[in-house]
Image 1 (cartoon, helix red, strand yellow):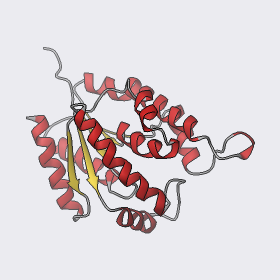
Image 2: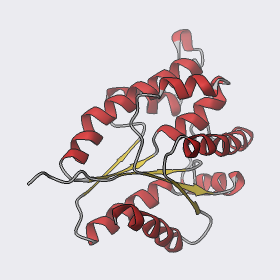
Image 3: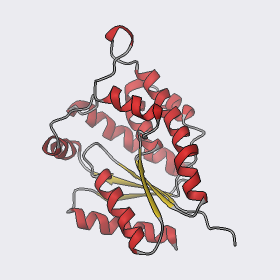
Length: 211
């Protein structure tokens, strides 16, 4: 018998929206239903993704110690995504394993769309990344998301600035409209609810995809 392809499920939202927590909870929920599930994230743990994480943390700078060029960073995200797909996501899906990713293309459309000032170009360079079966967007106000991040860790990434997060929040709204128009399946979840209620809403949305 041919193995049924797994489902590709993506959690999206601002830093502090709860994507990491909910991605882990979703994997546990899938496993409890007897499904094989694989948890992953972007930037990936591959060679390009590892470099991106160093850039985001400020440990890796551009030539001569200058800030890393946002267009170059956008290209790195797109390259990491394709490598992530080919080396980790696609093989698991083809083996019948559900893949849950903490961030994917939508993050680039929002974050790199803001940093480069060229959202259409960012969309174009990510055009070869296959669409998920479902994107779950955790809607959280920027002030709430940042407050959560600051409470969770003393480490700061280059994007964790109030005004920048407000701009990304608006960019997410535009990007969501674009992928919905393109026919992708998106469900928005109220991310400011208690963790268990968010997880329940996520599970209900995923049930419809599994049916």
